[in-house]
Amino acid sequence: MTEAIYIEVTAKKEELDKKRRVSISGMLKHLGVSRSGYTA
Image (cartoon, rainbow, N blue to C red):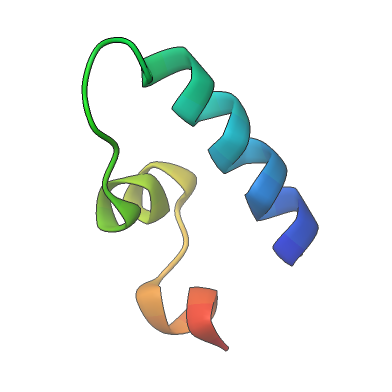
């Protein structure tokens, strides 16, 4: 699952990179992953 999250985050970051900064909390919310689920 960690690899899938990494792939999604990388793709989204590249999409938004020129527009604005990307927060980890915002990315987790976009992916539907809780903070505790991300760190577990």
